[in-house]
Image (cartoon, rainbow, N blue to C red; front, side, top):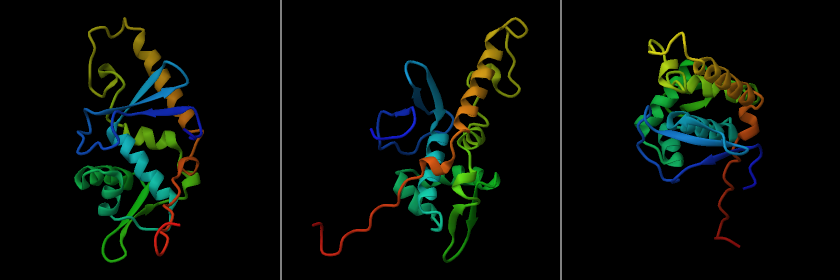
Amino acid sequence: PGQEGSWQHIRASSRLRHLACSNTHMKYQFKGEATMRLTAFTDYGLRLLMLMAGDPQRPYSTADLAAELALSRNHLSKIMRRLSLAGVVETRRGGGGGAVLARPAEEIRLGEVIALLEDDQAIVECLGAGRGCALDGRCGLKSRLRRAEAAFLREMDLSTLADIRLAPPAPALAGGAG
């Protein structure tokens, strides 16, 4: 409720922990019956970027992000590594270190991020790298699925990380709530 856009995130539980990257998918529904599945890897990658975009000057430690997202540090490190290698985030070690966005949130397109995080996950097995199909050459589904995936990414590229950034949490009031 109150979210902009027509994508509605559907999840069974808000307390998902220690998910297997390649086997767990999050489901997104687009205005009606059609659905698109994204891996938990991508779902959590988008969440951590939304959080970071809400306070772009703050360096986020792995421990802070893991606690905020209720995610294992190991799982988070895998996501952060991919985002760092692609130049979406920068990481710094040591005191005052952590992860920050490598460029302004207004320059980071959602389709770009989804394509990056879903890189090794094909919609169907036959679209995966190095995977053959017994119906190859006769199947009309493969090209349609590729076009649908491209349309999805084009639609997501109409929005940037700035469009979905999370507001930083309000500071706690001194002396209790009023």
